Length: 277
Image (cartoon, rainbow, N blue to C red; front, side):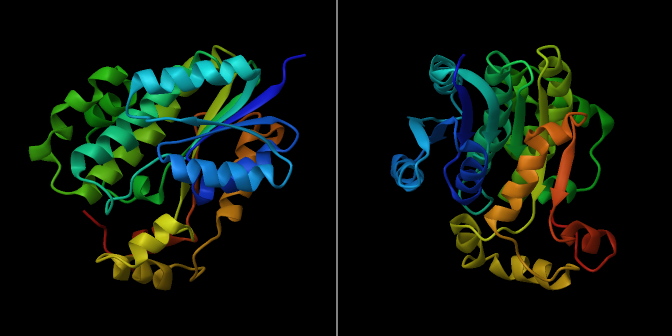
């Protein structure tokens, strides 16, 4: 019997927590753009008796993602693919945020659809930002969902003059993640596999600490204070939700998004927070 393989793209706090929860007794292929982050995460898992392989990947390069998918398939039966890769609004210019968070996510859907096992499951870690912006015109939602991946960044409303800042770029990218999940549910379903998204709020990771200590840190603190739970969450809480969506209890769930934000979006809808943009 083929060994069962779990692919986790992004070896940061959330990716590592999911890899630990999902990967024991299986082969974990851990991938990241940053080789130092990747090496450190893999070593920590190996020290806890996980079977971990590593692969450097740039999700904004189709050739790089194809190489990752091929490496995963060579290891055995790919039963789960989790994409946590992404750049926050404070980490990169508009063009790079769109390349990684929007185009790169679509490429992962494309390439792993070809190798996911029957009965397998895919999951992308999106963001509560997908739920923040006002509704897009239906034709833009349709374009984000169904435009061929290699034409996505050519859409008129994604051009530099149409995207005023990195926050808007980030929200558009995350909206696209959730819409591409709906579209991919059909094509993944033809292979007998499921795919969903999970939209976390403020999770205590090194990335979140970077944001909290940046010029926009007060925005995050205001969100926490206005939310019903009045706190941030740990990566392990995201991993628990991910485990449900990836597992057999969610066998009837595909093309869906799970918002796990402590009620930040609820506070925004209630008028307790401004809509960003």
